[in-house]
Image 1 (cartoon, rainbow, N blue to C red):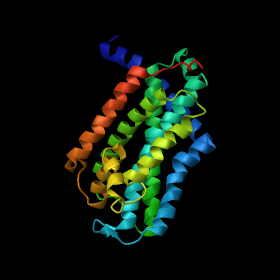
Image 2: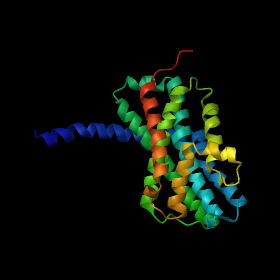
Image 3: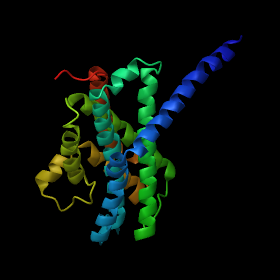
Image 4: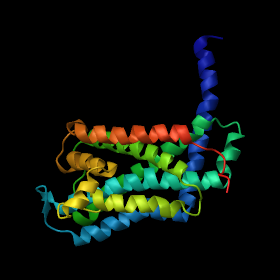
Length: 262
């Protein structure tokens, strides 16, 4: 048997395991009413509400466009950071992660399937936001789809790393949702996830300037509001990369498969 044939024979079971686990992750997500509502539907409802309140111009474009861009940012953090962190804590504390390690499913395959599933959910949510904006408020579709997709991938990767690291810092399943939302909601408010922050007091804008979501929203604004390439925002890319690398290092060093001792 040739080396190529051996490689293909070995690769097929791995691909089947990945596809099976990815399908399982999607089924688990969409069958959970709480996850489907708070992670997928809630940002859509926020857009309907905020889009009906805001009016006027922002950065020479209708402010509803900026609201849409901000909620794409919030949706990314809500799905890739909060949703992933809560899910990992619940699975760790209920013993699901421990049991998974005793199965033939490789740990890396499980982690990758979970991350890809999270990315799929967010991708569908972003698409739903743009469609909803078009139908309700006449917002345009992105002019540079490639830059938008790259931006969403960069943001998802950074917030997934931060979400995994945060999950390792939370000790109990009971407090996971409260702890994560204690971080997420103020961050979204201060970073422009719920609309422009130009009218905020200087101290709140200074706090927002160090938060990763601020720079992700800047990237989305540049790509969606002004039609620029994502590479035209090097500062935002560097800050997001820094946050993502920090989260990844902490996640790798502290990842736990077994429930914490009470």
